[in-house]
Image (cartoon, rainbow, N blue to C red):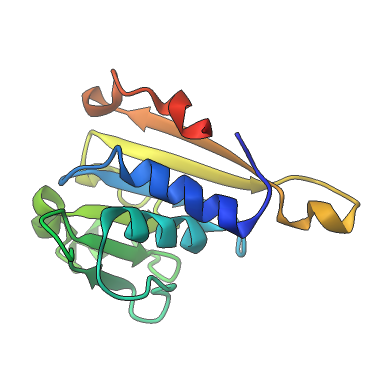
Length: 158
């Protein structure tokens, strides 16, 4: 699907949040500035969590408790973590996973072992020469595992 502005990226995150439930793992892949944190901000809004969702680059993981009876959002930035799952285990994500939605930026190749079920979101900038095209992104959402087998992810295109 194509996203043409940061507002649309947040809206995509809000729509995606409606599909998420406790135990879901979301991997966010894309270059610096692609919109991973913006999408996660929309997830937080859609899940109704407390606190501003900002990039957790320097704290590595940030927990946003639910303001209602929904799951908390655990937002992880694995960019600075060089090790695989072993280094991620120090964050105790496996303890948080059953009760939370965990969104991991830069998690590809590092956190897949946390769950056989995960949602992989790949955000790519489209090549444009026009100044209007600078916010245009291609977003692919792929479900992995039985949890996502019957989920209509095409509905996210809105």
